[in-house]
Image: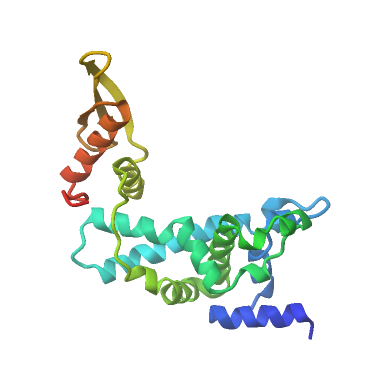
Length: 236
């Protein structure tokens, strides 16, 4: 038995799943930099699996959140969802299951420390979720997710201190796109101006905010929507 095959078996044990189609796991671990010759990245790297895995993760986490937090409103669920499916969380899980040593990388990416890069690890984690889904269906993928994300699910989740960042995470989690900010007024002397900004979010009434800089006005407007929608409190 080759060393590589032993390593794959060890990884399967760590994932808690034995693949019927071993090529799916191999593909999930194949970074585009490992391609040679005329191979097409879309077909012979983990990029397509990453696309699918992101959706599978989102579905599994959404259903899990509904069960775990029956009293949570949509806003709280969206904040929790974003914290669990973000790239940083996927990279953390990849490190927990030790995906790095198993990745197939090109020489350049190998020299550049690709096995430890958060972006590469996160993509590989999503690709592995897709491979689990394709080989064993949603139960296989969900079993892995609930086992490895359990500590993140129970961790306290708070909105980020930046209202604009928090609002964008919330609106995108609700399918409302990206907030649009418009400067609608400026008053006061040049040395102490006061800016007024209007913020528009798809499907919601607009809000305005004021501040001594355009950024401060945007922050105030974003905070106003978050508080109105009850996903931001005075002590955030």
